[in-house]
Length: 92
Image (cartoon, rainbow, N blue to C red; front, side, top):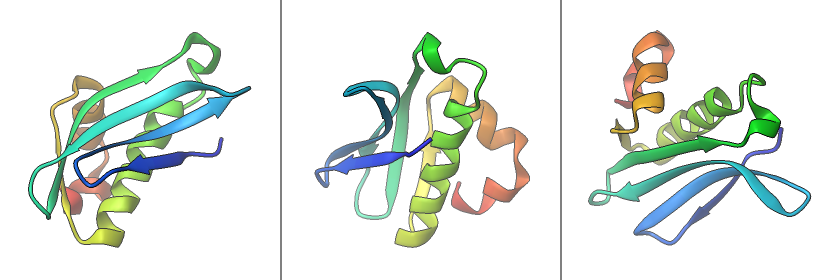
């Protein structure tokens, strides 16, 4: 599962494509220069049960560490994953 990213310095997304279609995506908005707000996570049925959503969360945590920023997950799925995985607490 290759996770790609688009970012225009205001909004962005982590996503997985299959045959030219985005089949999983996590949308975020920048809140200043040091924080992103994860607003929505969506996974198509083709990837359900394969850990795609968790992989998107992992990629967002990796991105936050690389940039030295924090994450505010308002998306219920992302919020749930972040609360369960202690290794991600440093980016919250």
